[in-house]
Length: 445
Image (cartoon, rainbow, N blue to C red; front, top):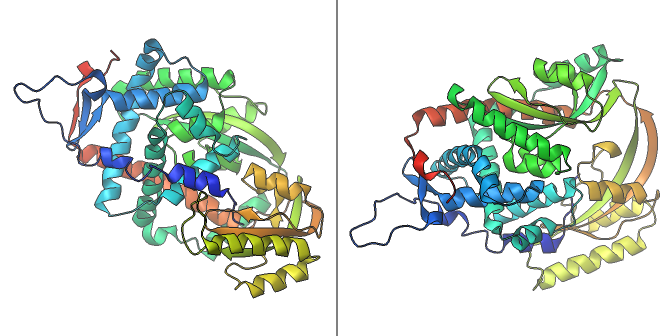
């Protein structure tokens, strides 16, 4: 089922997003000509990646973003401590961005807004709160937008890279269902991760120090999903580091050993895994095949918008769509009414999205809304970037967990394949890159 987000958030984050990366594209690193003023500290070049410059200002902005999200004081001492890992991340992101551009992949402002909204929702933040907090602390919103744009573009690159391997077959799903049944009675864990890569043995100490800084702040209350979204180099970053429910056999052996001993809510010490360091948190534990879940059957009516949303000036079509949704919410008395209404508005999306496990709904606001709906009660209109929806719960039943649904298995297997492709392609890009790391310019002034 779609996760519905507010018009205001989507449009507000899109404003100014388009030129954000234009400041980086094709930025070269020429030496100042005779008589030209020396660059300011923020303009000082600290690395050149295949001809594209990364400045001290870029590193400082990303460091401030991390400090803000974790509650660290934004002082020169703190920023200097973060700079080695921040610079490494920016180099890797620049390599990814160059690959996105080489393949002519476009990431829309709407996609960026929805991703940032998902970060806020997973952390229980009000819509738009992340942008307001950044701007209030002197961090340009483009710093976060740039990062999310690269993450989304990189995901599209990896789907291209996988090709036919991205197709999960019925045989793949059947094998996972067989394994699930064979492990009935074994524990299953809900895990979050932050992955910090180590590309060179000489950089292992920097990565270890950075991981320790992250862990300290997490244990002092920094929000795990926000930190993961900013600094994890795993493809789960856009989900706030959420791995979902996994069995020990699906984790790196080192992580599985730690997770088995952790109490829910704990943050691990640095865990060395192939290619880097993992920081993990355990948010839940259950026994396969014995846990109970709330299963919902729902019906939805979806009315699409015909153009991009501007909440300050909605189009006539958008106003009418919201009014129509409000009338449907008021008049629908049962799920048959919802099916009929969805037919009348063109059935852009099926009225029956399939059985839903309430606990697996990723968006906290949507999960809370569905928890509070009585059977046969229509929701208020739910406005998203691409349309407006009304949802009704047709039945609610507590069941003992059976094998994961086909879509859950598909998503999990695809994520695993994408992660393997990501690490391999990143290594290849670094190996082929022409890098000029200007170490003398890295320290904050």
